[in-house]
Length: 374
Image 1 (spheres, rainbow, N blue to C red):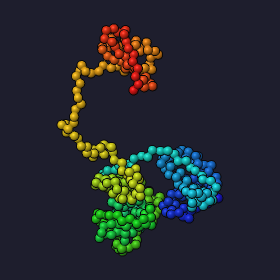
Image 2: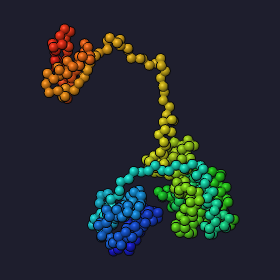
Image 3: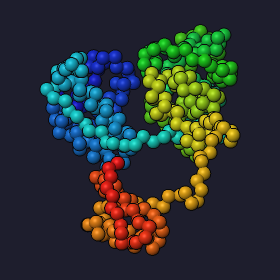
Image 4: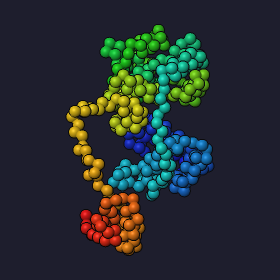
């Protein structure tokens, strides 16, 4: 069976959302185009070549890593079943593996209020789409989406699936239904009156707030969506995607004083490590400035006892392994005595033995070499 003939249906992967299946199809299409539509059984031959070809095309390591991850998930479910892969379909007798490249995760970009405003203003020029709205309301469609995401911090799939009846104007929250949530859970997120005002501007007169119609109905293809978005980015002179606005919402929450657990809930993360890794990367200086260190008063600090100058020990330590005999050690001492008067010289061996050379009071040549173990 050719890869192009292979359709990844939900039965091949338990609890796979439509978004997940869409990601799988994108990675499968990459494989088809790069290797002239190989059969499923030939896939194992292209594990390393797949990465090389994507690198040659200039794809970012993070993007290549994602494609490898998606393909591995697909073919693992097609391979032989095992203790950790119980729902595999046994269509293949091996696990094709696409080795993902190593890469360093970049810190997410930070955006200012001015940049957000610039993109918001750029959408005032978008009068072409969506075509079902009157031309004067089309810019408001995009601007309302920006306001919605900056307040609610949801992903594009959730935004496009929100219905009018999901907005509770009395208790001021929006219901993110399980069918449009990434983790298939019902979520209830607070909203602000400003959002209600923007939504009211784009609400058709024949649709009530209790309607099951979608607020941001998108009847066009994804290509058209990104064409409109990229055009606004070019006008604004910045790169700020919808997911960047979701991150921007997290930054606003941090500035408002949200702690990490509150931020985790706001960003809809199941794992708090996701919040810390992708969304909560304060600059070190900012974090240090917030640390309050109790500084003890001077009178509570006991100063170390001061030694009189004549009591200071005059000791010179030399490594013993630089000498080949005791006579060399003694000669070294005799040379040092021209510089250090009435001093002992300690020579420490690599094995831990300490040789102490004691200078006698009267004659320099009467030198005692004393061994001790520390």
